[in-house]
Image (cartoon, rainbow over all chains, first blue to last red; front, side, top):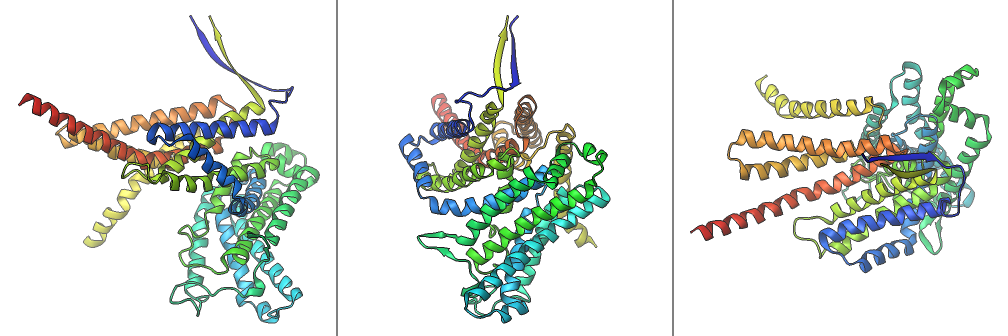
Length: 376
Length: 138
């Protein structure tokens, strides 16, 4: 009788082939080839145009960098929450609240009248205040489910998912009601924020803003330092892996949960505020209809792909943003090839899904050795 | 009151049944300790599959009730097969359950948009074949 078994053991020695970049690139390439095979089997797209499109996506990096930065910031926010088993699926709502806070400061608060001058200092103070209030509102929005979790032990996940819709509706209420703009050509939306309140465009890279780049680096580095070099980071890690040990060593797990919720919400709100000040410049009506880009939800994917390791946030953000923009591009090149009724959208989704499945499966070879053992 | 009841049954009750079934199904998976984030994609895929099977079955079987029942069973069987693959990956291999779940969601969305069309293509091929047979018999 033949006995087939899959033996999975943890690796202790590492060779060069098993080093991280090789595994990452290898997994991604395997995923690309697999999903190409699926597309080839169904519509027969030639490999040259498929891989040229992918190459072009990587080369025209400016559009990629924009979503990469936001996914990095939001992915870090969600990752630190996941470390402390605070399942922050409400980053989308916190992001919208950040937008609301920012537009309030630069258009409607007393501060905006006070600092309306065009000099650098008042503009900088105004922007900083807008970003900070956006972050604070995001933190408050995240604290509500956090406090409910701490005091009533009700799971935070459904509360957060529903609060995302409350955030959308709150934004729509303000856009159509008290904050409705006067110079909008009949559209329901707010007015544009003033030139001085907008973030600074990097010359030569029109899709990037100085402040966003700085914020992404600062957030990433500071969260890395918090997690690896402070007592709070240790407590967060304990809360995620062994909450009983945290309790028995005399720490209050409720305080840790509340601080994780605050930090995570603050960063997500920060991202929303920067999006509004740097890119959107106004609040649209019906914001839940894809007008946020669903960054808050996509960043959950980034956090999962990083395998709860803060150092892998940037590679996974690159993978996700490259895959999604490649998905759009491949839709263009598939357009003439498909039989009527079959959408290119379907192929871009299958492409993203297959690549990610293969990537997730092959990535385990970094830490584990997988062997197929056949005994007779 | 009658209007209200009519509206209630039309809008809420149908959604209620669907949400209850999805909720019970997902609760079984989550009870086993596996995080299931792929449910939305596979839900869409199963809707698409049900449509395709129903069209196929109604062309094969004339009894409407039987055709609907069989297509529902086939849909359930296909989705169960996909989920067992999902669970094997999740339990045998030390992988990130969230990542694999979200990837399944994308694949589900994509397949859901294609399955109906593939079914239509097969259906039209069948019709051609039947016509061919009938011509030769004449």
